[in-house]
Length: 354
Image (cartoon, rainbow, N blue to C red):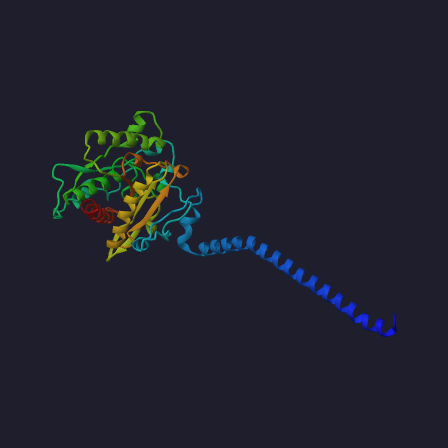
């Protein structure tokens, strides 16, 4: 090889070497970037969760949420405006907290319900009767002598703290008189005033459980027996409403509508049986009507399967069967009454027009 060729070959080799180094460098950059992206994918959820926890800790309203981490289920709520556009959305009401232990998961010993608390001076059963004894409302319709709605209370001794003396904890809010059966009676009267025949079963389920040596977990079994008997006695029954009250405190169970405080309500649909879609459809109709007439009065619809409680709630017995939680442990008769009247309006409209 001549010296000229030897001289010209050296730059060529050098360029090839540089090209290989450049390619290796790019590959190394891509590899490192990939590792960073993978690491970020794992780290980001933790950072987000930490930020959320931090913001909840600084928010005084999140104390209920902090105490409510004993179980894990999610509230699925209907967005009524989305349904109007033929698209169903899930929204989370700010007053609902995931992880809250619900009533049918609360399984204390029977003595919790049997041991009677002293009533406060504010309680007067006649007040519940009088406040719901208004004048009839002319809807232009009547079922006449037919009862078409059946109201009952599977957890019949769920009570309200304002009417219990020296009782402050939701876990102790149970009583044989100052309880949800009074709310059921108010709803029955409100529906009858609107021309809808209604059967109200105010049976003391706890007393029945105790007499049969059964525990609180059998509440829906006993109430279900009574629903079946009612269906056999009256084939005209079309709507079945199991009234409960929430265990959350007042800031989560009260809303101001047009200047008045209402007890918020929540629909519960059990998805632990094959025909639950029919119950869900009925609940969605009521939710949509409530949101239209009384915005934010309802928290929405909670769907629960068997891993989150009973999961059926006797709703397999009829298409139009639901649980309605009306108010919470801190709500008063005035707040409960306003909500009962609103629910009666919606039930009446639904029955006559849907």
